[in-house]
Length: 238
Ligand SMILES: Nc1ncnc2c1ncn2[C@@H]1O[C@H](COP(=O)(O)OP(=O)(O)OP(=O)(O)O)[C@@H](O)[C@H]1O
Figure (cartoon, protein in one colour):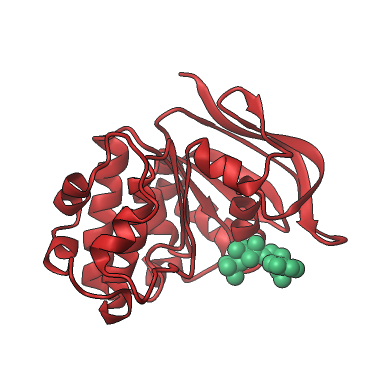
């Protein structure tokens, strides 16, 4: 399978502070990747670096065969990187339908298909962004990213703050996106068990670098390794 994305020994940070240290990984077309690690190890910074929002001091980011290390953020979005930020950033004074269409780009993802994936959004189509529950806002944020017709969907803690039943519903939808639609994705998650269920490959970060890389299923089945990498109590967070 063709390489879609690669970080090649990336050193990056904010101002003079280095947060990512020689960080490397690769992702193939249509594959999904879980990015795991304890608080503050650089998971969000990895996504920020991919979107062009950090300072890259060394190394390279490759996307679909091109070196995008110095590309501005807007060019990356236009090249197919679909970002669902941690804060969701739904437009509060636009309706659900306006939120979905305002930054849409042509491609297989249409309003109709987003409503099929998230029927709840169809029911709430006339509601304003600030009249939605946390779970609905998260569905809207994902739906809006899909409407840009990305080649890679970036999800930063999509389950944060959601009720368990909503988490299940979203996990099924996200898995379907990867398995049936062949959409590549990167999922940053605090809940390792859930993230590993949803993805093909996983990397674990420690202090801004990759300390483990391999198939998600292997890591999910190796409780001792998982606990060693991520600390005790992982079962409680599943
Ligand atoms: N805008 C910023 N400016 C300066 N330092 C930052 C900025 N954003 C993050 N950092 C620092 O970078 C390091 C990594 O943070 P990051 O948010 O990437 O970690 P994380 O693994 O996503 O953490 P969490 O799981 O808590 O969200 C932290 O030490 C953090 O304080």
